[in-house]
Image 1 (tube, helix red, strand yellow):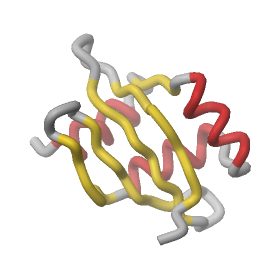
Image 2 (cartoon, rainbow, N blue to C red; image 1 turned 90 degrees about the horizontal axis):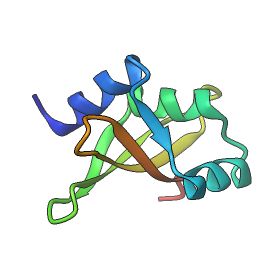
Image 3 (tube, one colour; image 1 turned 180 degrees about the vertical axis):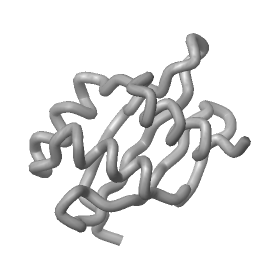
Image 4 (cartoon, rainbow, N blue to C red; image 1 turned 30 degrees about the horizontal axis):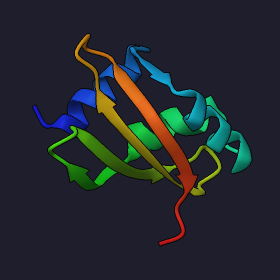
Length: 89
């Protein structure tokens, strides 16, 4: 199973959390938790950092806006959302 598939499965089961930074960035770009969840579930991998286990996912918010989410799998088997931002690429 790919890392993206693992992350999407965890989100579908509610096994993820946002860091304080991710929460602040989501609010700043007017995204809510449903936008984050939808962005991950509908997203594709843009890039990854194998040395740290991070992955950048590009997806869509509920209203169709592009959203980027950087996250990683934790040692306890959950997904940690590190940051969120509007996709301007």
